[in-house]
Amino acid sequence: MYKKENLARIKKMNALAPAVMDAFWAFDKLSVADGAVPVKYKELIAIAVALTTQCPYCIEIHSANARKAGATEAEITETAMVAAALRAGGAITHATHALTD
Image (cartoon, rainbow, N blue to C red; front, side):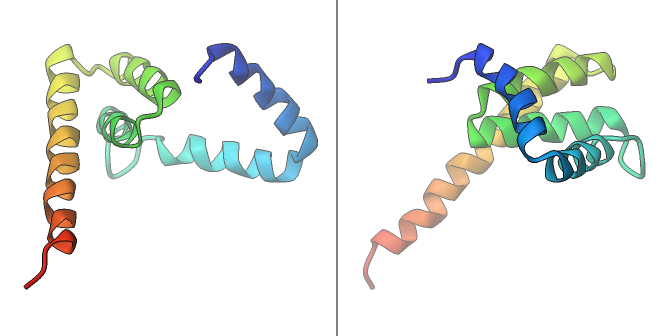
């Protein structure tokens, strides 16, 4: 389902909705810019979210960005474990809705 070549269609989206896409790209850039939270940590957060949402595009992009920001393989792996724990915890807490009193 996910084909990397589909990302080329983003140019078409930029042309079809330029104001909205310009606003998105500005927001996207600012959201991972250095601030109170350093870039490396923001990219690690992005990896965790990408793993949780299971977006292969985001996993690849943010893993590369995290490495550029100085993240190690150990940090990326621990980030993945945090994401895995939260997904598992979510399944457990949501399972309570399946039970009766």
